Image 1 (cartoon, rainbow, N blue to C red):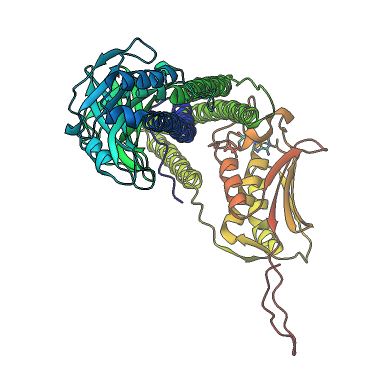
Image 2: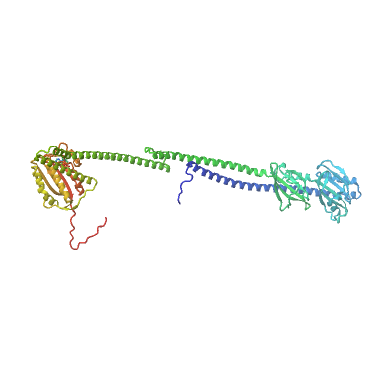
Amino acid sequence: MRLRGPLFPNVPLFWKVLVPFLALVVLVGAFGVFLITRDLSSRAQATLDRDLSRRSLDARALLRDRELYLLESANFAANLERMDAAINAEDDAAIGRLLQSVLALKADLTLVAGTNRAGLGLVEFTRPAPGAASSFGKGTRWSDHAFVVEALRGREGRKTSGYLPANGRTMLAIAAPVCTIDEACDAVGVAIVAIAVDDLAAAATGKPPSAPAAPPLSQTGVAIYGPDGRILARAGLSAPDEQLPGTATVDNPSRRTHRSGSTEIATLYTPLEVQGTKTGTLATSIPTGPAFSAVKGAATRLAVIVLMVIAGIVALGALISRSILAQLRPLVETNRALGQGDLAARAPVFGNDELGELAQGVNQMAEQLQAHYETLELRVEQRTEEVRRLLRDRTEFFAGLSHELRTPLAVILLQAKALLTSPGSRVARDEATDVIRTSASELLELVNDILDLAQAEAGSVEVNLERVRVTDVLLSLAPMLQRLGAAADIEVNVAVPARLPAVTADHSRLREIVVNLVDNAVKYTPSGGTVDVSAARDDRWVRVSVADTGVGIPPEVGDQLFEPFYRVPGTRPQRDEASTGLGLALSRRWVEAQGGAITWAPNPHGGTVFAFTLPLARPPLNLSKGDAIRPVRPA
Ligand code: ADP
């Protein structure tokens, strides 16, 4: 995977870590709360459904009880002894007495009436509430009610039921025929008993013994709807509608919720039956609050706990982030200081964890950097000193050069001027011309030497290396060297072994070096002295030495002797020979260009010994028959 660089590079690390962490914790928390609340609320819904159906069952049981009470009261009133005779005779007083005895026994009835065969009310008692004092009436046309006519006409003596208004209230009434013949009923009239529907509704909201934990009366509602769907009575919690919503059966009760003020109410609609015939609808209501308030409480507690946990996790996360950052910040600052050049800056090491290791790494890096920097400073100082020395050398070189050039030039100018102003005698002119010629040739020699030196300084000493026999070279030079010495009354001895291994060298440069050294030896040796030229093998070299018995050189002079224009202070050529101060400098460069080295040392017998080496030439291949040339394999 290719990393494309950090996200939000300008946002501090603290927030980059904390915000996604916080978001994740909140998301997980919210999802958890959602799941638990959903579970709790479905449990609450189940509890509500169970409560509501139990309440509905209780209400229906109470109504069934009332229905039985009514049926039994009607049966009792119709079958009272002499009821048929009294009705037949239309003896209102007798009917009244009989009906009052019914009222006395059945205190919950709110209406008791007896009719004649035509359904005309002979006697009727009504009362405003169960057990209250009754008021007497007669002449009501009960035949206007279909269920009364049905009871009068039926031959089986079957009781019928229906709703009827009385005293401004709606009553559930049972009409029981008063028969004269037992086998087939020949109704002489009907006995009507009734209970006000609102009393029934009130009874149905009563707390039944079957549900001791049921909500109190005020928290239960019962409504009774007639067959036409219009509301007849209600008690307790308000029913949702005046008109019955939709249809409902016992097997499939319909359920609705509605809001009354701030209370949400759930209502279950079930059919209301009297003697097995549907005569209306019963609506049982309870508030949803109690079932859901437990859920709400639990959800609130849960939310608080989750919030507290989230706050705890966030605080912990922030604490950890801060502690990491507290370790990181000094590191960042150290890094910045190092970047700004403060190489002494070091990061504090808090422990051995990854951050501790990082801090140690940064410190090690800083130490190395500091060490390198110091070495570099030292080197720069050394180089600066070297450059200064070189510049100084250059200045000295040019000072020496000017000096060397000025002397012969001044002589030439002086002699030329003398020639021009006073030509004098012929001898004097010849002398002056000779001086000019000598100075000019010295000047030429000097210029040639300088050119050679400049070439050598530029690193381009041209040497033509070949196999050279040192013995041959020295022996061929001997006569010339001896003449050189003889001119100064100095004995020059050339003593070389007849057999010396050949060297690799430039033939003419080798001659120049030897002549240079012998010339110097003669120059700095007083007359009567000796110069010995010798050569010998030294390991893989051939060493050539020139020893004199001259003025010598103080040991402290060292290698300065080989610098251009260097002259040993207080030392002068013994017989005013020419001196350029470049002979030894050139000799050294030539020796080195041929792969050798030149040194000097005091002569134990007085004077100085100069010596230089040349590398032995590689032996020529001496192949005999059968020898094969093998390729050289790298080791
Ligand atoms: P110069 O042309 O002056 O001889 P060189 O480079 O040959 O220049 O020598 C440099 C200096 O070294 C001389 O000026 C002299 O002081 C010293 N020198 C060289 N050879 C000898 C020697 N054999 N004995 C004493 N001093 C010497």
